[in-house]
Amino acid sequence: MGPQMLKLKSISNFGVVLIEFGNPVKVPAEYLKARSLLGSAKKALAVLVKSNSGAEDGKSVNFEWDIAEFTEKQLKLQLTFEDANGVSVGVSPEILIVQVVEPSVFADSSGQLPVNFVTAQEIPRQI
Image (cartoon, rainbow, N blue to C red; front, side, top):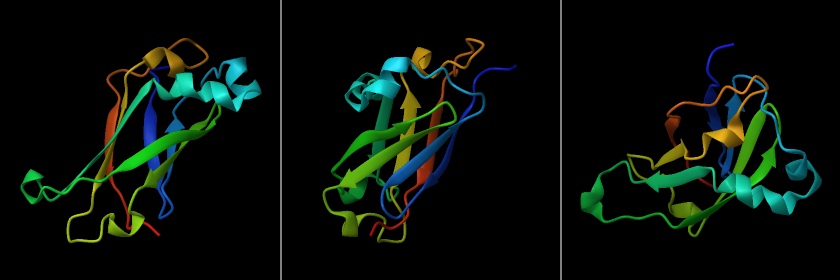
């Protein structure tokens, strides 16, 4: 197997983000037993929203995010925007940026880690 690959598969109009793993991930048993322990997996990611129209408009998007599901095949994030109706309403939609800052959390069954994983995708208009 090659290095572990992660792919930002989709972002829904309801703020659900799906990230797929190229190889199955060893999900620690404690994550499966207690949803409250997903917080430690959350620390393994940096999630940012950037205005695609540039900094000159001064627009910022206030949001929170959480891990909704963590399985061997995918990671599901839930974005909650302070003003969902104001997200990606202009000509230039906002951009979601996801970066792995603690690769060991996403090691595959052979121990391969994601390397320098940063991905970005336009956020669709939110409902």
